[in-house]
Length: 223
Image 1 (cartoon, rainbow, N blue to C red):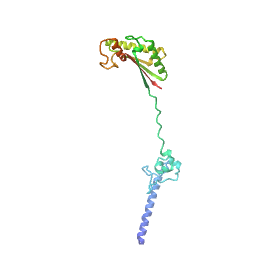
Image 2: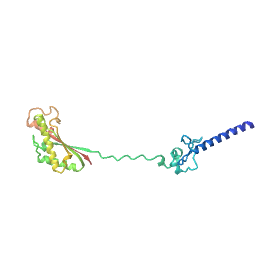
Image 3: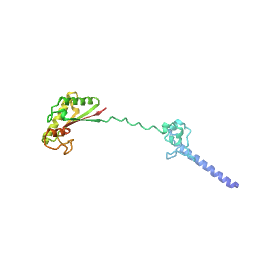
Image 4: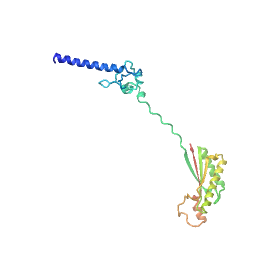
């Protein structure tokens, strides 16, 4: 390489070096006090040709941890929790109300075609009371049912009276009346299948239809 070419190359390199230094100096004049990396006029960190961030004279690992670009520029030098914060803890699951459904045959609670509790029926309801005290009770739902003998209107009233009798007894055992909901379904929701108990009213058919004469009692609360 002749002397003229070599001098020209050195001049270009010197100019480039001065230009880079001027760019960095210009960037440094606008660095906010809380930043420890050189940033350009766009607010972006100035990178070297090797892809490294230019640090200011105020750079320390502790200061870098508070700089918005700290994790981008010096992740390996910062505490792990700074750049990889732990995932937020999931909110503690709240207990969901759980239902405990008890079906009591109406024949165990009442005589046939009656709505007055029998001693055996009271014993069954005492079990319900015990279960309700084992949970944080939300509500008790008592739904009365009948078989298909009798008119639909009569069976509706009978099922309602039976459910009301259950509520009255449970209240007498200390359960808040406002927590007991009663309903009568009459003959609308039989358990027996169509044709399972055919024939006119007789002792045999009445016994066959016993599953339909029932009171569904559901306890809802949290354990």
